[in-house]
Amino acid sequence: MKIMLVTKRLLAVYILILLSAVGLLILGSGDSVSVFNDGEAERLLPIYNVDRGEEKVCSLTFDAAWDDADTDRLIEILDRYKVKATFFMVGSWVEKYPESVKKFADHGHEIMNHSDTHPHINQLSEEKVKEEIVGCADKIEAVTGKRPTLFRGPYGEYNNTVIQAAESLGHRVLQWDVDSLDWKDLATEDIVTRVTKRVKPGSIMLFHNGAKNTPAALPQIIEKLQAEGYQFVPATELLLPEPTKINHLGTQIAATEAAEEQ
Image 1 (cartoon, rainbow, N blue to C red):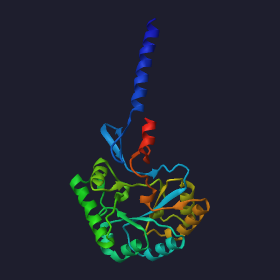
Image 2: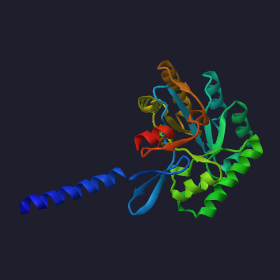
Image 3: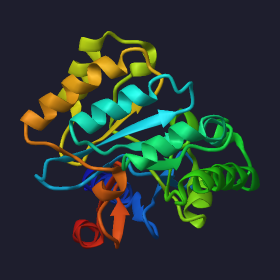
Image 4: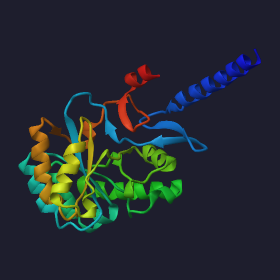
């Protein structure tokens, strides 16, 4: 009887642990999701991809922080395939190359926020994070006439402070689920294979405007994915209409779907 009693008590403990694990995911307000993590009260997640079901839509996104040598080539390629992309631009880049910014905007591409000076933003105070976001947004708006609504942290870094600051300033934080690794100067064929094998409905692809082999890889990537039935849309068009939530994988989902999962 004693052995049976101990076993039942242990079983009860295991059940409590399991229930606690299941309850780790707590949906937060707006687009961010809160989860318990390593002693923190909660950890917020940005959007890595979007639940579009079986609809074959995806987004090309570029981080612009280097030179502008590829501006005309990228515009020509995207125009040729009738693709609209989203460019996350650093404020100092916008200030240095306003004509390139305007070219991208005039060709229908989205210009979004990549901070003002490209710092390690997850090491900054809330006040400094907001200064970075506002500084870049002001410069983009001055050139394009439109204020950005999406933010991507330099180096892909974020934390609760960054996400909360961005959302308070009207920016949703966007990451990616398909990394081209073009900044590593991978061979053209390696970039093409890496990207096309990873894209799925709702994917967000990451490229850089000054990477060595991106202009050579891009046409092949677009042609292959279009042949598979994919449509390329700007990031704001990929996102779901509100109300939405972000699940524990960083996927943006409809709020009704989130409620069903609970």
